[in-house]
Length: 428
Length: 86
Ligand code: HEM
Ligand code: HEM
Ligand code: SF4
Ligand code: SF4
Image 1 (tube, rainbow over the protein chains, first blue to last red):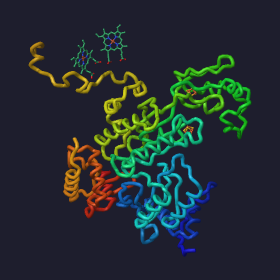
Image 2: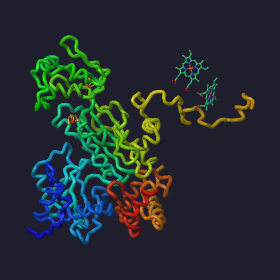
Image 3: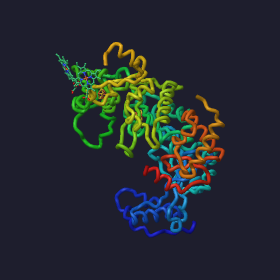
Image 4: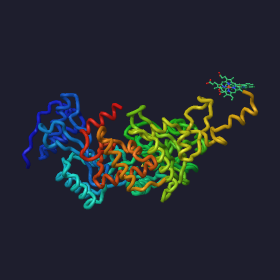
């Protein structure tokens, strides 16, 4: 075993005392097993606690040849004290869709990382990537070669790029998937390779796709373009199964809440009264749904999965502009396309994305997320740029603005008027 | 309007080198000014080719990317701090 030096870290050690497993324990164990980087990392964390400021330098010219993303450069500003983490770059690896791995793959990735990096990983970053933490500049090209040639994986996105697209496991395991999320995300990843690896945008851009409105990848909160499965026909009802739930023969929520006795299942209280649009009722022993009013929230289907299923005319709802709170607070995506059929090769969707990117690349300010541009230049501008039709959901509140604004090309002759012609008819 | 790519690359290098004397790191958006006739996508493609040829270089914070001219410039920290102050 390699000789390692442990720093005194009393403040970090406090974090081991709670009842949950502590990252301090994990990192320290790895360090004592021979990885100086791990012990230096804790040493520097201790120093940061002491000074109440970070000791990481931010960014730099690191990357692999031809790629403008995938590697995030980090350097210690106390390299004399912590020499093994003088360089501590993060490598993002494009995760497989639905995050299916074989244990052989994961073992091999860990072997590569023990050899060429700090041995520390993070599964998964909130970007979705498989995150490899801490390596040195001269290891980057060999790592890139190993990943692409031995492991058949690519680097993910970082910087002002398209970020690694992400999806729920969708049709591979989930009966609720209304669209093939894995197929869509694989196609977008291949189609937009250039945008993924080479910075093109004012800032980051994320696609995330969930197969149904349960939205297991939180696309609506975390992506500039959220692709969420939905249906436009009717919820399929098996009335016999509804009766079985009511009689207590089937467990609500597939038994997910059965660790405690919640009493007898009450369809009125637990399903009908909780429907957000109040579009369900019982007629005798028959459950009725007014599908025109259903907002596809999934609540009733989640509670009674044997009795209720999404419809069969399926597609996606597209929402744009979610982001974290750097400017103007956090924002949830805004509905732009209520329903679009999502079938390969997804041309209609890709044309829409093209019009969004053209707008944002032209008008977006440096470091302005798409959602901020949308706020700044309005939904009307979105409609003009994309050729989409206005829908009631785009109106924030009715009647708050009595004016209708026309643009020059919506008016015959534009804003140019012949004043002399006008004065012939109207005295000054 | 399509712009000749080699001409665009020449304009970009000229623009960035001139600018690098007082501001060594710039966003892709700032580089549109090198050739107003070129579309953002054309500028992006040309700039990326220049990076592959080693005439420009990427400069990333992890969240944003800036472009620089190799050999010019100050530390990363300064460049990003300056942007925030603007
Ligand atoms: C039976 C006849 C009328 C009814 C029921 C009526 C009703 C209303 C209502 C409900 C509003 C509020 C609209 C809103 O919330 O945006 C309104 C606003 C208004 N009405 Fe009338 N109105 C009548 C006749 C008229 C006439 C004859 C005029 C002028 C010649 C007039 C001029 C206006 C103006 C200037 C406003 C204000 C609009 C604004 O705030 O932007 N109304 N009216
Ligand atoms: C070219 C024609 C017109 C123009 C450009 C025009 C323009 C305006 C403007 C700029 C305002 C102020 C809006 C504001 O509060 O910010 C206004 C208010 C108003 N206009 Fe006109 N106007 C025109 C014709 C008319 C006509 C023909 C009438 C009635 C016969 C009218 C009735 C009113 C009324 C009642 C208000 C008061 C709104 C209020 O204070 O709530 N306008 N107009
Ligand atoms: S988002 Fe819907 S389809 Fe995807 S895994 Fe979750 S419940 Fe299933
Ligand atoms: S999916 Fe939601 S809105 Fe639609 S019927 Fe069920 S509970 Fe009501």
